[in-house]
Image (cartoon, rainbow, N blue to C red; front, side, top):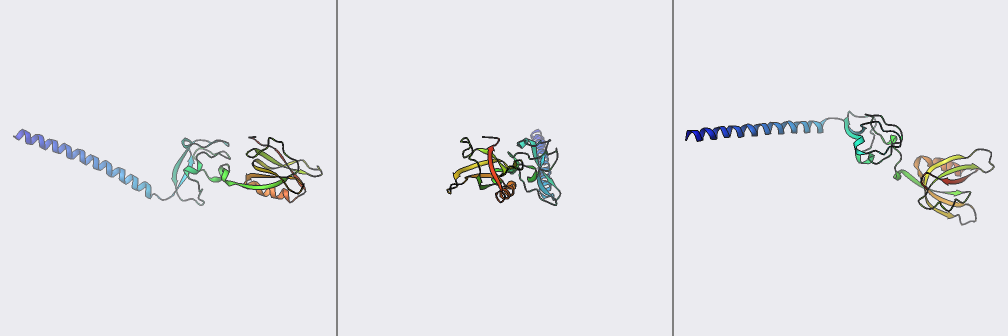
Length: 195
């Protein structure tokens, strides 16, 4: 009988030891989690390795880290960055901001412009074109107004004049397009990168 009791005492002691170790490990994990969540700072997206301009960002190239408060919040989240194209080189360990990325398709603006020469029949809705400003008198060389604009529609002006091209351009190029429309230049369309 005493051997049974001693066996049960040893078994009970082993069970208590295992439960004690499990509770200590759970406590350590809980404390680490609470400390991480309560650490002051902001979560930002950081490049793990060098990303050259034109690179499409993938999940394995970036990491979400916490830094002390920033003067300016970069305002990009992990889901906003994945799949975007890098606009300028990003070094390893550098914080990724919206300025370092190419404009997203949603940051494009639709604008209608009269064009001096009817584009070729290959320029249809969905095509990518470049817009150029040409002097009416030809005194100055042509100037690029918008690159890789997406064609939305081509229509006649309805007044017997120039055709009207409706395109999506980067928000940063709208001012150039409007400046050309207010001058003595003619807008000419050429094929862009993906026609």
